[in-house]
Image (cartoon, rainbow, N blue to C red; front, side):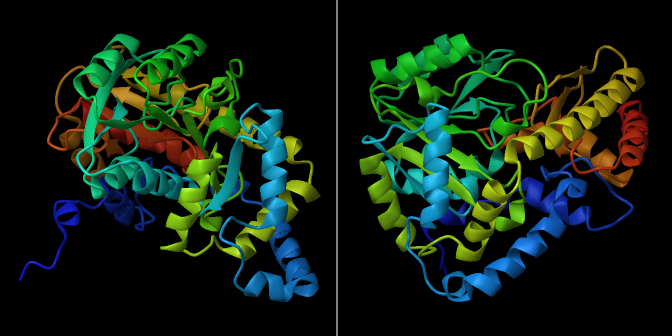
Length: 392
């Protein structure tokens, strides 16, 4: 008996989630999952703040709450986003979601009809791609160079797909490549969105983790016509287990998203929202973020330096200015086979084909994170990967 809907029966589990199962083995070095560094979790402060919440506001923490999100956190985020040029009072609204991932799901549910195109960077984040697939969207990939999505190819994709729901982009420390979209490219992409009258979904979970280079304004901050939906998250700055993210978008889109959210989660975990609010207002949050950046810069430097020393120059690695990922490119072979050899050698990496719009595509590329492993694991893991490379 066929019990599955047409849009779900062809959907495959995330390769990253499947690889993640191997990392349950403590002998496997975790270069695969995009998890934050466990040593930076503010567990003691969370314990203190949680105790305060249950002492002072137990009913509010345990009762149903409003779908839009914890009012105090929403107001703090609106002020923070307004200071960054992202939130426009009187035009935009903001809701709290179960991580940035739910922003992708809500945006697709609200905006995209079955068969309409969603134009993405190629490669792109597998979690978002699977969300788009689950709504039977037509995925269209646009190649990137070192400055991001190539405008000429984006325009060609827009011309070829007049029924485009939105353009999806991760401009800061892109997942999986670690690249950052340049200021001019951001302007070009926004200009094309205006020209072809399509929306942009700007996914920015890593923006607060810049540890080198110069901050670049978000696309949302440059939007004067209400064409950009902005997704943010506390997953990479506080803890992913909280599942607290947010959508900032034109008010009408947010209103429809609230109605859609009520059909699934009703509201985001209220205790987690209260905890996030107390943290960002009860500590020197900018100082705390500065500490995170120092940790990630040191780990980036260690992994990149070790990789460049261990591998021949034909193997290329991106040099991210922030975020969690390094993207490797092999001169020959197949990254899927390379990743299989790696897992047999007790190192977990993600093959580049996991991030392709075409699920059957082959790739020479692979993604690694420097965030999760320890220093010792970084050094040992790179040596094990080098052994795999010379067995290709």
